[in-house]
Image (cartoon, rainbow, N blue to C red; front, side, top):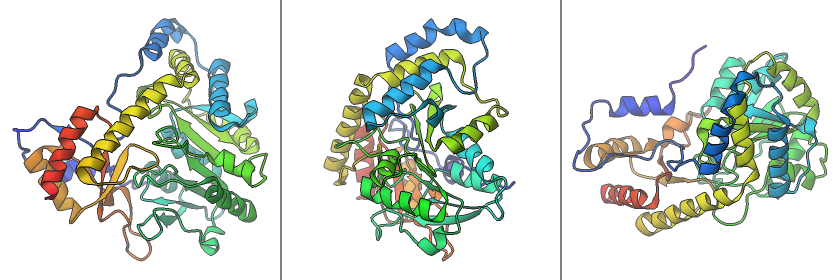
Length: 378
């Protein structure tokens, strides 16, 4: 298998011969990892349950974690799932890599479509599945929302959406998501939405694909799946707690497949994750910080505050050269957009004119870094 280097490896190669200006403190706005302390009650739960390391965890997850995740879905989206409609997972990266391999294994000429730019694990899963890839380009012209090309999509077995979107920050309404659900039913492909940024919103809560499924009358969630994670929501990526939810017929077989993978979460981590999924107060506090960071970005860079995520998808002249100059002159790292996308069949890379800035630091550090970016731009 021939996997592309990850974007951060490409960035390191781009900057490897550059000595940054040591007059500035280093600032890395590249990775989507919250730089805040994981809330104390989560850490306490982890410590209090360390003795559970003596036990093997179940592939299906402990009932306490499953119940906490189902309760989160009820509170957040108003949807009650049965126990067969959700599986706790070891984060979501492993799901995004192994679910396509599971689902596409016995498909003749497997075909997968996903948004472009994208989280690179989608591409890795397509390669591991020997699947043909269809890119759903997100561009300024389509307001960073994927165009429905029914002729192309009718050949798909699996379509992966990512809304709220990393890196473009775009969102889809219930009605827009509903059109994708109807298409998945019409052409019988599985539709999976990566909703890992659903809780990092700046105004109104962002809808789930599960809500859209009900909106168009698909009450059994046929062909519909969502994944979500605690990493961004609770500033706890190290807990590796996520879930996949939706079509129980698919999940029944997928759970059986997962018994062979060996990716069950350790019990102390499950206990801490359950505590985090149950609590909303700490999530509200984190959202307030991200909103403050976006307000700072609006003041300094003149950008609009997006509806969700903690990214800025900023159009700049010559992004690769800008990234090198920013690092050399101002000791700030950002990620060139073209590293997060691929050339489509027409040779167009929809990320080539942009950089991604992750606003994951506290406001004072964010302001300092953004002022350096502004100075570099001018």
